[in-house]
Structure formats: structure tokens, C-alpha cells
Length: 214
Image (cartoon, rainbow, N blue to C red; front, side, top):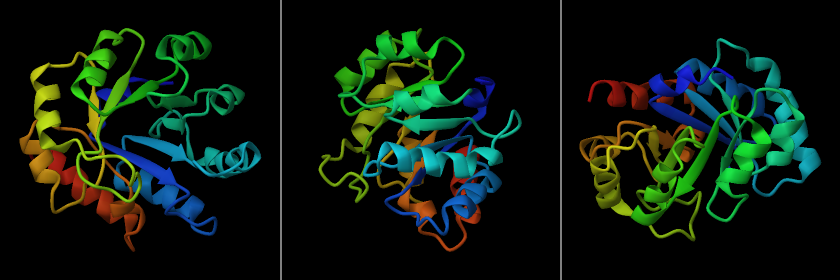
């Protein structure tokens, strides 16, 4: 997997079954790519293993060495079934060290963080991780049980000058993305804001433009 994409990836797209129907599954993925997403993650929290694999196989033909890397959320079993897939894990999932051991060195590995302590933990494991996420910055229906970490955490993480990319996630949209950028968050994730848009590709382009003009 070409990790060079990460250095230039300002927008991280998530193809989430919570917002995308099976009918629109492939077209929404195509639009994330067309819009310029630098990374795309498949997230299917409530689906069975078989269903996740079915959804994955429907979009795999869209990906090659010239497209954004494809990341699987939380499920290392699925990631290992297919070549070149990356993995994103949470704080309660498989430990970073074990995930890297199983994945090998070529695949992308990312971690969610929700506090300055967790962000520091990610930085301490920068030789094992390729990126980490910070959030939720704002309240979000994607993860309603999580208390927003606020822009203050984004500023604190920025001040640490992480040696690996970090992405700000949670409730980010065109109306507040500049606040995130002004706080030091140069890379963002948006889920519902782009997936629920009539034109997902255009929504991605707008957020990407905001990041690149900062």
C-alpha cells in the first residue's frame, strides 16, 4: 500500500452504513474518490462479518495503486483477508503493537484518540502507527455517546507537533471547518456532512478547498 498518500491527504472520507444505503453504496464511494478524498474507510458497525465482506467486495474494484488507500474500521480479520487493506482501530480494540505485528509493515494503521493522554500515547507509538484521529471535535450523531473534545484538544495536539499525520473528526462541516483549521487541525474527517449531501463529490471538494487554502 502506498503510504505516500497520507502526506498529501487533507480529507479522510468514511463510507458508513449508518448513512449510506446498499443502493447508493458504490456510487457514494465513487463520489468520495471523485471529490478528492485522500483516504477512504469502510465503517459498518452493526453489520455481520459476512455482510461487511459483501460490502467490501462491491467497492474493491474502485481501488488501485492510483486511488486513495482503503481502510477497514476495527476488523483486522477482514483486513487480513484481502491484500493492501489498511486498518483503523479504537482505544478498546486490538492493541496497536499486536495490530502492527499481524498487519506487517506495509499496511496503513490508524488509531482513534479522545484525550490529550491518548493522543500522546499515539505519538509514543508513531513508529507503529501511520496516523491518528482526534475527536469528536463537535457533537455528532455518528457517535452520540461521545462527549465532544472541543477545539482546545485540537490546539493541544497541534502544539505537540506530532511526527505523524492526525485527523480531526466529529461534527465537522463547511460552517465550522475553518474553526478546526484555525486551531491547527489541517486534516479533517467528515461523515454525515458529505454522505448525506445530494452531491457528495462536491461536498468533499468544498471541505478540501477549505483545508488547502488555510
